[in-house]
Length: 263
Image: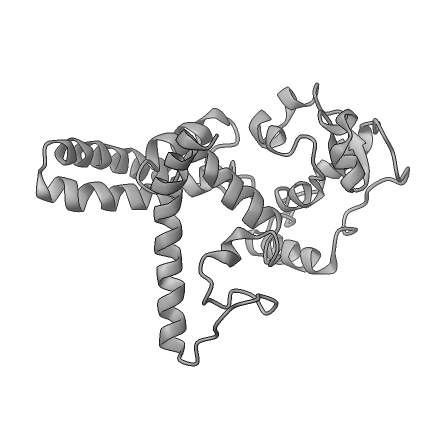
């Protein structure tokens, strides 16, 4: 793995289930857009390949139709080969949305309904109104409406957009929503590195999931190495709470400023 990561011939390729593929031509045809593929170029993106394709198995057909640039395993990738845990979760999701039920139309059942677009527009208007009040030192607009609308936009639309889920048809809308609805909460680039890749690509890995490292006194995972384990649940909750607050402040303020002085 280390030798592959240092070899320049792999930098413009994608590793999926042990094989390296050249997806340069496929980028423009990728249903989830080019950006998500660019995030994992030069990396082993098997986890992302499995995690982002839950509702059907068409991604296996597409992958098996492509010829690997460098093959370590000539066998076709079959559904269910990833992990039994992942298969159980995938089945639960499909059963919940009834995507395998041929007797009913479930095409848009798991997608955001149109009324949520109306909520999005209303929140954007309130956010802009609050931002104007914030600039003019209006207490109600600047201290209440602007933070509230920004937070609602962030936890709903910006978060979904960062996972390329706000819009599948208009993939650029995901990026636009992230940039214009999360200005108070996180830096665009650091969010993708910390949340999308570190947390979702390496979920619950104590060495690589940065969300398990928000505070040295918190037990985020059974394998976490901490300096001090609080005996009181209230104290543990307090450390977790401050951990999230400090990490949000770090991503929004400290992290972007740091890159000005340390590229």
